[in-house]
Picture 1 (cartoon, rainbow, N blue to C red):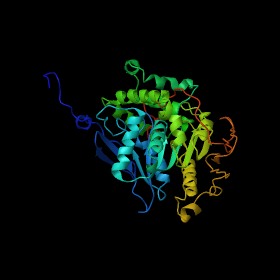
Picture 2: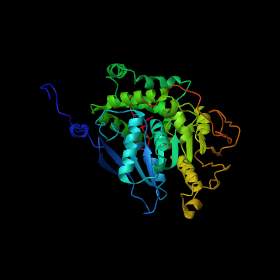
Picture 3: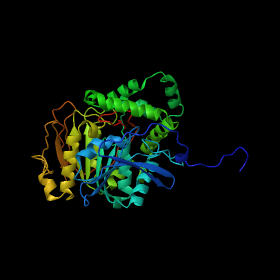
Picture 4: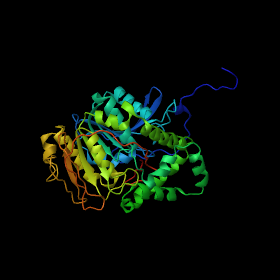
Length: 401
């Protein structure tokens, strides 16, 4: 080693001292050291020893806190854990600096293999949806069911509101943005991302907004914050350009696990229209459309999403009879059944192979409506991305994409 070289030091050992991450009531946060990565894992003590395991994967700029509300509502149904991807939340950067979709998927697989919890009910939002799709495709032995909230899968026509986030992956853009926004307060940043990620930003309570600001202030002290955002954004863009068997749509077609797809009609980052294509790509899919939701439906309408997850588990025979009886009226049969909790009108349909059409109402409709369709194939390609240069939250969480 020459005099100008420094020894390689794991990223986890040189982290700056910042304020601790918030842990909600009934939650635990622990650190798991694995080869090349250290992951923060948020969990809730299981109500029963025999509950099936679940793992939740957040989106770009988010953290495990994005899943706190849904995890709480699935107490007694799932043994829930949510991880912070490398470089996000309370997890330090990966030692190899790999923020690609494949790199993140490798981290999820490495954790599941080491924990011995698989197969799990796997959840993913936005970037986490792309990661979870890849995990389910390449390691079907690790996944019982798959739930994707606004998954970041390639789009041909990118929404204009998603372009700035995609541009974060362009060399020099993050540095320029940091310079231009250096006078912005954390409150201004959170307001901006809340408006981007939520169908109705008014659903964020003052307390939740305050917690989101505190979390953003903490993250801005981390020297790797923008690097993790930039490289992960670039990883999404790169993943969208891949073709062949490594393409995300091709991998979606390979997923064997029963899949619940959730799309918001007011999503500014992942096109609502992509619900049609996703329903065709995943061979055993169910589509839940929420016309008033934005990019983070599990944070905006956690009760509705939890009810749909219970339906999925009931059909997959992952719920005990007592849990099935506890489902809301009208929610006990998924195929052709409608689920209409008081807080949000919606329609959910089981999508099975052999049907020949798919129709849906647009975001302006009273409720999204999906008819059965055939499992289809990939055709579109393009780039979209989610999230933004900051974090917003609801119920003490930070919205990612």
